[in-house]
Image (cartoon, rainbow, N blue to C red; front, side, top):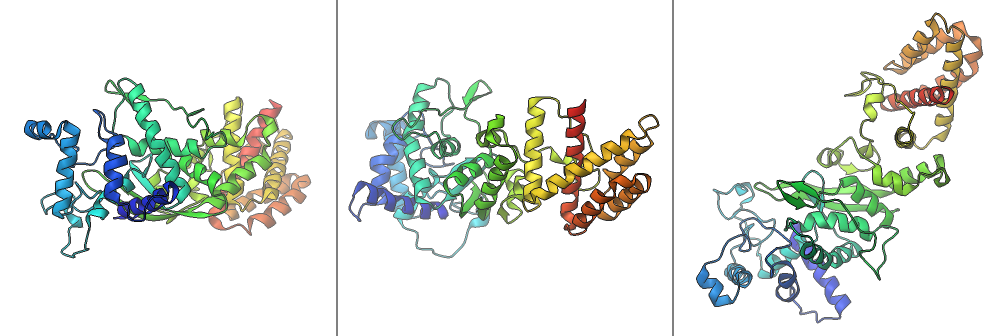
Amino acid sequence: MYTSYIGKKFLDIFKKRKSLSVDYTAQQFFEEEFFPLFFDHAQHLMHVGNSPFFQKPTQEAINESGSRSKAQLKNLQTKIAEGQPSGAIYVGFAAEDSLATSSGQLTSIDFGTSSEDMYASWIGQALAIGVSGGFVLLIDKEPILWALFEGWTQYRKYLSQTPNLKDKQIETWNGHWLCHALSKDYLETVPTAGFNFKTQDVMGKLVIPTQDWVQVIFALTRKYPDESVMAYAYSLSQTNTTLGFINLFLPQVKNLLQLKEKLYPEQEGISSKSIEALYETFYNFKNACKFGAIGLRALEPDKLRQFMPGGAVPFASGKDLKIKTEDEYFQYQIYKTWIIAMLISKTELDALAAQVAQALIAFESKEARTNVNKQLTTETMSVRTQREFIENLIKVMAKDESTALVFKQVKDSVIQLPTDLFPLFLTLIRFEYQFQKSIKS
């Protein structure tokens, strides 16, 4: 299981940074560092289903060991020493027998699993990054693993200082902590400065909400703007789910953020930090992974489709975007930035869309009383195909020759667009149309 690989990878990092002997084992780390922090308390930092730390030991075992947690540790040590791996002691491994819910992972192949593998799997799982949708990510990058490790002690402090807080949420904590540790404002001297999130009340208990997956992507982009990073995505519950290795195309994400700054500079009052903090996606994490990799396409903004021409793509409904408030204007910026990025960052198409919108508005004004021209512009911005769009432009030009130059330019650009990108360009025109209307109203 990849949890064991990550656990061993981290152990090598730990030994190097702490100048420890190469013979320092995963079991030593577990017993000396991991257990005291994670389990030697009334509230645990981590949950592993059906593990000894999930089970109540006998009173005799508690008396013999000196405490409940130490009795649970001894039970784990005994089971690992027996050498029969299962998901209860080897995190992410197969079920113990064919009657368990994860029995589909059972095999007769002997992988030669060692006790080191089992102890390392606990360390690896504690370095998993929880994202919305119930999935976690493991990333084989030393700075990431070390940042998460440094967050463990902060989680213990937070748990002990927050009454009525649900425990065993290390993966969820990691998602928030990583975003904080990779932020521009992070201070190594005061690691918790500026770190905050809102807990949620669930059935009378405070819980840490799961971090949105796109926020983790933005955080990784800050650290690795010019790299594609590989992440292993999975979920451990009653049945285990593996999405596999997912490539994160972070340069595409960087280009999106840089394009936003180019189109709408920070002096306008909306910084790149704002777009990261408020960005919501159309795809959940599992569906985003269905692209085979996570890049710009997976970052399609949430609710954008309701403003795309009806029938152009699934769930498109052709609504008009209102741009009257600051929030609506900000959302308009997010939509436009992503669309232009999808159009291979061709800002000239943005300028052309603005010219088309301006021409259509001027065309409308020539028949303001009858609304005949208004109906034609509405139809022009509601088509599904390039052909229908060009045919409508011809109808407009037949009534107003002054639009010919702009429409000739847009026709030449439209016929070069891939079919799947045309609805985005048309939506760009619709947005420019609404924006210019809002300015004049």
